[in-house]
Image (cartoon, rainbow, N blue to C red; front, top):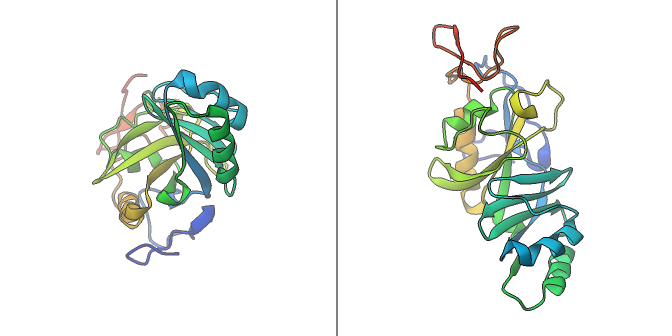
Length: 232
């Protein structure tokens, strides 16, 4: 498939082809993340915890945290809201099972799989790509595996969380080599174009790239090429 300007973003996790143009963001790709079903859970944590654990095998994460195991995941979204990620085609059964277990109490379970789209930003510059677009702190010391942020990307609401990614490069700080970003399906074209623009050749500001041998991964490179220590 393609987004509004015709640049390919392959669906269902297929990686786009390599760019023919030289890039200051080598090895960084933006593409549609592999499809997963999504179920919104609303209610008090104590009311949801046991049923969600029984159906998904995942413990309800605390504030700003995510539990990801393979193609399943559970994301904190608000004090009374979580998002359950499931293998494609399984949301219907999960919703029916959870609804039956939870009964008529003050909880809500809804299949939102078709309402949202996930992108993956993968490669050594994924933090830099996101930091250009969101006010959330993307630095290694503040955002790593097991974290999730509800924020804005450009003009749209989004959720973003680090992931080991689909490839096998050496993991950067926090063990993450990629991030998944979730937005509403109605703004997917805009979001995809925004992410590609932030990752295009010639746009590097040289933050959070791999340091020289013996350097600190939490450092940043100045525009003059030297490294400054940002601390942990």
